[in-house]
Length: 382
Image (tube, rainbow, N blue to C red; front, side):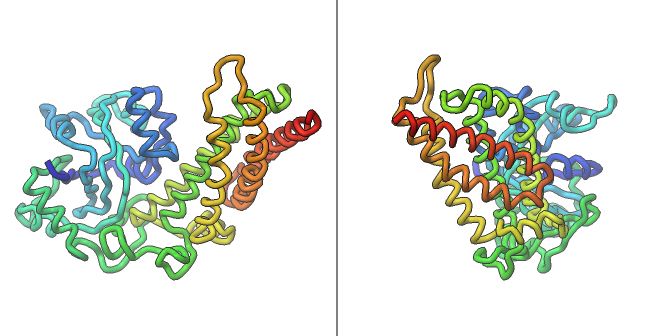
């Protein structure tokens, strides 16, 4: 079976769309309600640790449940509001969980619970009036999309072909909608192409951040967070034990600040793709700090170059009472020095963009000092 088209009107749930699609959900919130297989797949699909999530109630006589069961990973979801499809995404994963539904969305006692959950990725703005969709799908022109549905293979194929025809369903001019989705979220010219602000070197004529910039920076912060957490929490018998105990105690606060920054960046990326972007303080600050376009790509490559050797060393499994060995520890101390320096540069550029980033930078600097002392002691022993 080929790719199916999923129809998802949001109706009166614009707030839910804002809270769990435009603002992706932290996987840590969902972790208690997911299986190990779910978590593994989602962690690989969403390395930044947050994901857009939607859900549907069972429906009358279970019709929505049956439609949800027909959904496949890779199917195209079209979100609709006010007589138009305004956003699209791809089904990334499905889970059935009443607990996730009640965790994410307010459900009154008389409402059906949207327990049939699906995760989406690759969100893009589109502009598909119902009349044009109906024409492509073979419905009567004034047919109104009433609820969640998965189109049959022939209708899915017809709609996908229409969407792929250049400019068929896409507005000629980009529009910006407000946070309440008062507008329909219409995007720029071309299905996910053009009509957006570009970074210098990204086929754009300015260095304003684009979705890829926000996502790139989110990946960088996620990578730094994971490396710092390991360097702090694992005992390599390098850092003074009392110092390490203090680092372990304060790290959760720094980690939460990084997680909030990552979520904000992914929210900005989604808002841009959904045609909901507004001029915000963070955009100008990232631009002025050189955290867009070519400069950001250079910083990501540099970070990757210095963190790869560190992560390769610290990812080696340790059994109780064992150590990495003197030569490996020497390598770790050598590589952490430039890695800390690059992290310091990136965090310093973000101090004005994200509240609390000073805390992360200070914790990193104290950990760095701990490893520098360890290196000095290592040299003295030699």
